Image 1 (tube, helix red, strand yellow):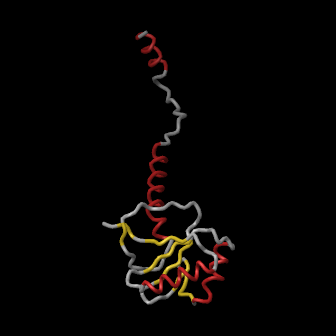
Image 2: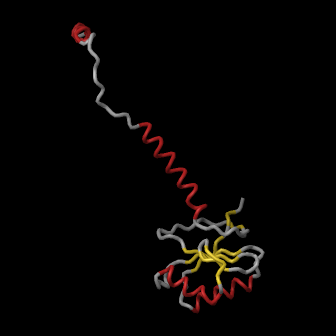
Image 3: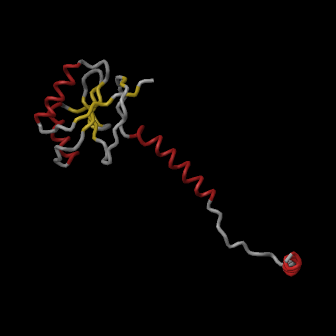
Length: 143
């Protein structure tokens, strides 16, 4: 057998062999790096209103739909997503347009920690009166 191996090497000595295989390892490496970059940067791009959120020690919530966020800054200005500030009267019609009239769709409320609690409660009551009951408060993780 060793002789056959040497014989076949001598027969191919003067010719170049073609390598018909494709090395996919660099492509997989690039795709994994891009996946990590998008996983890290995507949550940072969802809400553009800078708030000083309160800290809480609780597990995160996963939602398959794109998040709808209402934000209240320290001055009490209202933002829908990254757009605003909004007038209080315009909030419900804009929210209905964003949720396509689905009052069961989850809405995330972000409130600055310097905001008066009564202002946040008034917003919760207004949303509840409009039929939106799937409301979640957003906080930053501790540490």
